[in-house]
Length: 256
Image 1 (cartoon, helix red, strand yellow):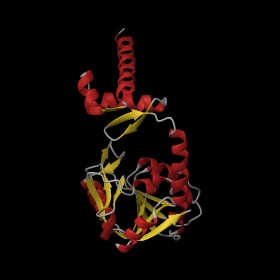
Image 2 (tube, helix red, strand yellow):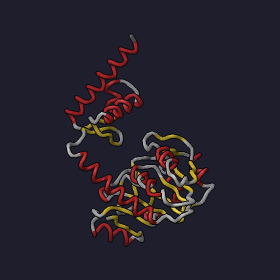
Image 3 (cartoon, rainbow, N blue to C red):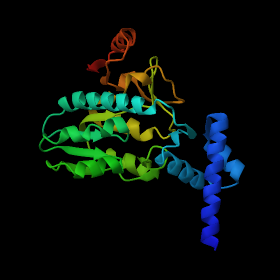
């Protein structure tokens, strides 16, 4: 009986979350925790379940109603990420030692590596590691380990940083939540230490980012322009923004 009660309680809570979304257009985890007097873990599970069923779209710290044109947007973004990934892969030579950071744009790079032999790939992402293990060329896989961060869905922390400092790499491929034209790459996540170490131990730092994120300023500066060698983006970047970034000494490559 207790299990059935819990199932009913969960269903009722999720129905109320959707009612609230219909009224407000968006909700935050903090708001829902207070409203339902439950844990963040429970609310995040609710939002994940509702997203999997196509009712909402997760956003940092909360969720929004599923936009009507979301499928068109996702299709465009997928094409942009694939184009960016193909250009990024062209820069990788056989037997290179690379780091692939967590993120959907960087993850798109993995399938482009199948024809390259002798690669050594370090990552802090379980999903990237799984994709790597499926490649026929069987690159050498290294993982940072560390503390699992639910926000970025990746390993972070001092242990991961210490592991990275034990190696040196030819290239780092890293994404961004936003690009601040004045400062560099920005993120919601406060755990930026690992990104800094990744850049420190790599000879070339390559940022992979969709053009729609350029000009989007997030609270935390991740990498400064001085730490970035190359920015690969899609063909929606404006001529003005491209020129501005290039004037900062960063090579900008546009994926068609």
